[in-house]
Amino acid sequence: MEKELEPKGEFRDEKKENLSRRISFWFSLVVSIALTCWYYSSNPPDTTEMMKMRSFFKENIMDVAKFIRLPYGEMEQFAESKTHPFYKTYFKASGVEKDKIKALIHISRDYNPNQYWFNMMFLWVIAFTSLWFLGLMLEAVMILVRRDDAERKWRRKQNVE
Image (cartoon, rainbow, N blue to C red; front, side):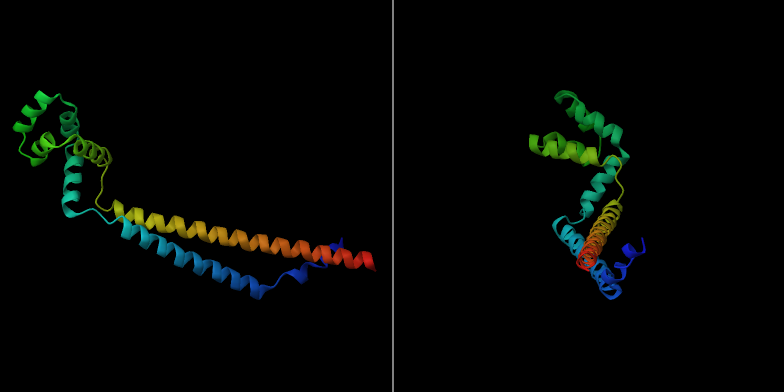
């Protein structure tokens, strides 16, 4: 039993392990920040007009949902009875625009103006922890491979003697 414990000191190198931990941490930090910046540049936050529209949808979800499900004739009467410009523009919009607006209404039901920034922070946290975890797992695999290699060398040495 004591002979099996002997090679353990040979494969552990604290300096290399500390260096690899630091590299893993900083690599994860830099790549997660770069990924978040890339996402921010490719998906900018909503404009002020879009935020107002989504807030309007959230506040008036029942009326808006009822309006978009109405038949054409009733939709025209409903649009004339409301003062908000959305009803008139939706009524005059093309089919593709109406589909986009319906999708926007659907995602605006629980809209919060700060959710974009919350999502950005959450993206960074997920990216950072995932990359750091993968780096630590890679380090653990390297330690296990070194340990197995040291044990194999030690057994060969014992068999030769």
